[in-house]
Image 1 (tube, rainbow, N blue to C red):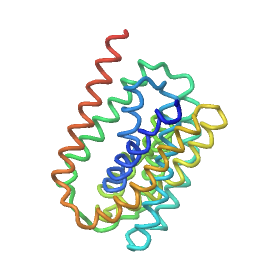
Image 2: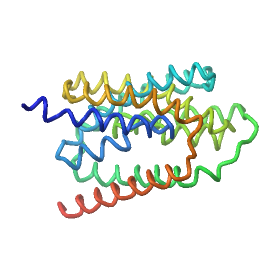
Image 3: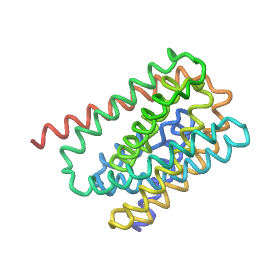
Image 4: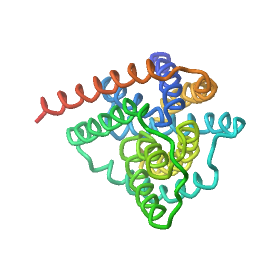
Length: 253
C-alpha cells in the first residue's frame, strides 16, 4: 500500500523533467519544494531530487547530442570542476537546519525565477574564452557544484547564465550544455548523499523514471515551443514556492 501511495512521484518527476530540460535548470527547482511541502526532510528531498536530476540530464543530453546543440569541450571541463563543490555541498546539507534550509532555498528559487523571467532579454554575443573569464568560470562552476548538492537543483541556475552572459553562448546551446554538465554534478552529489545514507531509493527511482521520460520529451519539445507563456507559468510557480518556504520558516522561528 505504501509503495502504491508513492506512485505520484512519477508524474512529479515527469513534469519537473520537462521543465528542467527545456529551461536548462534541472528539475530540482520543482521537485525539492514539492517534497518539502508534503513533509520530506531537507536532506531526503535533496538527495531524492539529485537522482531525478541525474536521470533527467542523461535523457536530455542523449537527445540534445543528436541535435548537436551541446558545447562538449566546455561542458565536461565545467562539469569536472563542479564535482568537488558537490561533495562539499552534500556534507553541509547534513548539518543544515530545516528553517535555514527553507530560507536559503527560497533565495535560490527567487534567483531562478528572476533568471527565467529575464531570459528573453539575454542577447547572444561572441564566444569569449579569455584566461580571466575561464578562471572566473571555474570558480562559478565550483560554487554551482555546492548549490547542486546542497539544494538538489543541479546547479543549472549558475551554469546557464554563466554560459550566456559571460561566455557568449546562445540560449539554444546553453540549456543543452547545462544538462550535460548536470550529469557530472548530480552524479557526484547523489553518490556522496548515498554514502551519507540520505536518499530513499524507491522514492528516488520513481522520481527518476518520470524525470527520464520528461527529459526526452522536454528536449524534443524545446525546438518548437514558444517559451514566453511557459516562462511566466514556471516563474509564478517558483515564486509561490519561495513565498511558501519563507512563510513556513518564519512561522517556526
